[in-house]
Amino acid sequence: MEELKTRLPKDAVSVNPTILEQHGRDESYHAPHNPDAVVFAKSRDDVVEVMRIAAKYRVPVIPFAIGSSVEGHVIPVQGGISLDVTAMNQILEIRPEDFLVRVQPGVTRTQLNRALKPYGLFFPVDPGADASLGGMAATNASGTTTVRYGTMRDQVRDLEVVLPGGEVIHTGSLAAKSSSGYHLTGLFVGSEGTLGVFTELWLRVYGLPERVMAIRAEFPDVSGCVKTATAVLGAGIPVARMELVDERIVEAVNAYKGTSYPKVPTLFLEFHGNPEGLERDVQTARELAEEEGCLGFAFDSDEESRQQLWEARHSAARAFMAQYPGRGMMTTDVCVPISKMAQAVTDARELLDRQGVYGAVLGHIGDGNYHALIAVDTKDPEDVARAEAINEQLVEYALACGGTCTGEHGVGLGKRKYQEKEHGRALQVMKAIRSALDPLGIMNPGKLID
Image (cartoon, rainbow, N blue to C red; front, side):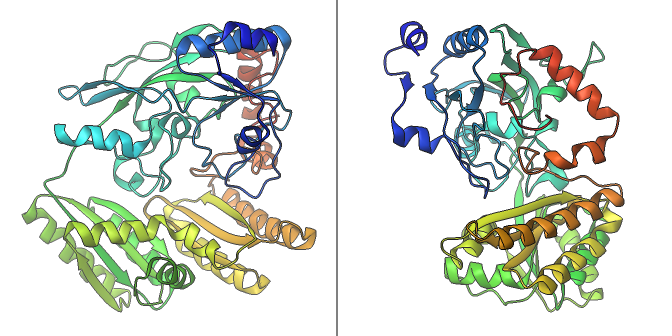
């Protein structure tokens, strides 16, 4: 503590009980655990000093920004230093001609998009929460626009990383492609703070579409939503968003946001393009939806209606949990091949009903990623065990059909136990990489892989 206070700027180190508590939890149901200290970094040099001191005394370091993760990623399960990078929130460079931007890790996605708008550009990855870009890279976040633009790993060109001993490296270049060396950027994206601390990111950005149109397609059952989504993809329609919410989510959103959407399983769609092309795409999507028993196909083409629609979708988890005050949120996040999506979502809905839990289903249906939300009484071991058993059944199904235990939330604490089953011998390779980069085991210990 004395060395941290001596070598870092004044007021950078805090042991205030309230601040420690804020950094001892995320938005998950996992038990909180406070760090021993919080360091507020304002520069790469601050991060380097922290890592050198931590290595010297073998003290754990847990990178922290917004804290919006849902699998316990930022919980300091072994104490140590919570390294808060929210003050590193500068947009350092915008290159419109290269469609690139350089940012610090504490910049949030909405902050970046506000800065990009005057250039006619936007950053597409949209996980719902106004997460930090460093945290989004650390978990390989994705979200509502993945079906068209891809995940965080597809957007990161280069990372500046401070390694556990304090060394600084760059993982890539600004070129659109490279055949030189190992793909270190892809390795560090999704590493969940276990290999190093991100201090700068070069990100790919896109031109704003000429026109945007949002659709609500309502169905009598979840299966109709999934089959329509599959048909739209099969038709080659370049849909930008394709989101499923079941009737319980719609009901919760109506109560939470004051909307009046019909309380039936609904597919939220968004199309980007020019007016002529959009008209054709939307008409084809409508015909495909009607073939699957669509009850209603509503257009939201003006900005205000579209914003309301996607605000409702992004509020889904909060809206659902608002019905059950005092309970914790468990959300499973699995991803399956598109061909298995209809059965997976239908089975998930039936499983929640059969177990009699407070649960709902939603997801990024266009890329095979879906979530089951469960309101859990964290003080009742039986209720937690029942929810965990449901989570496990959904994961087991995903793995059995060639999917993954997490499509976007990450491993953190909640999905560690499935790593060996999913990766087999490859897990040993991952452990060897982690051991080579962090031989002292100080980077976010207890997470991702043991």
